[in-house]
Amino acid sequence: RGVLTVSVGALVLAAGIGLIPQLLENLPSTGALLSVSAVLGGGALVILGARSAVRGKPRSRQIVGVIGTLLAVALGTWIVAPAVNAIGGVSGCHISRVSFW
Image (cartoon, rainbow, N blue to C red; front, side):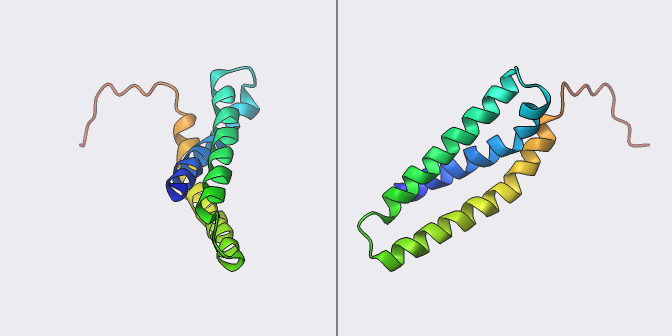
């Protein structure tokens, strides 16, 4: 259960980090509110999930679990945040006609 919570939290955190430009550009907006809430909520899920996953384990396994969690969150953020940032900047894509020649 803890690993699943960390996974979901890492994705939410990465999406929130990807939306940070919305926060910097349009402070009183829905995108800014979404960014802040995703970063805070995702961070809380990661912390709670990691605590749940390593609870009751020996100290050495707890340290390895925390390091693994940090690496997994960093990798997920490195992959997901730029994609969310790229998609977050698109406002209404209108395709009228596609021509291949």
